[in-house]
Image (cartoon, rainbow, N blue to C red; front, side):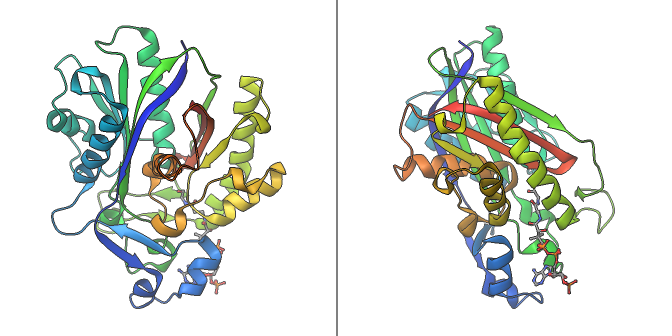
Length: 315
Ligand code: UT7
């Protein structure tokens, strides 16, 4: 019983939709530049009364409802985020209270930036596999309120990011292949945010350097997952990449000589939602009927740190 079975997913984005045209009235950019260089058209931002916790809560409720589980079934709650509403308590503890989990259900956040959901998933899987949790399911959340740390006067970053959340209820299964690779290059300069100084709190990124990292790391990561599982790409039904830039995914498809339709894209509507991007894409695929129960998805992410990771999931 080592593989992950997805029992249910849910997503939520906040109410304020910002278009490329809106941004071109705020900074020196254009709809054409943003579409051509990133594939992004709209993104959602937290408005009044909205935040990381409210998005994550809505997503988690949907995931639990679709999975047909209640608070008593959740053995652990792990949230991936680096923009929780408070430094402490964690987002996971806020969800623990709001969803009424048992006192013996541990709850904590992990921060691996845009790769966070994969780190959270593998952490939850290992805890389930260790067999000492009170219940057989885990709630794994990816949620961000990136607009709080976005400098809306910096055109090189503000056009890229969006807020949103998604959640997955998982359990273990012995009826699916499993493989997971996680890593970090230990870079602290190329992409950073959240420092103490006034400008340090904003996202600062060397975009082209992250791009070069991504197109190197993602194909290697996919190969490593497949090799660990003893599978080929043709045995995987869907590849769900972190949704940072459409051109990164196009590059990976060309490099792997893979069928493009296997690689889902939705950054056009959400922008880059960091730790939420992979589970938002998973949830959309399932909701739209583009993916079916029982299929195998390979999820792959990269982000600040520079972190990377990939894992197989049974839908
Ligand atoms: O989640 C993980 C985190 N991030 C990523 O994965 C991001 C990875 N990187 C990227 O997606 C791309 O590098 C960006 C979309 C960030 C930038 O695209 P690029 O094609 O690498 O552009 P660039 O940074 O090399 O800039 C090209 C030009 C520059 O002008 P000059 O120097 O050639 O005159 C920029 O100043 O585009 C300019 N530019 C813009 N122009 C209009 C940069 N941002 C904008 C903008 N609108 N928003």
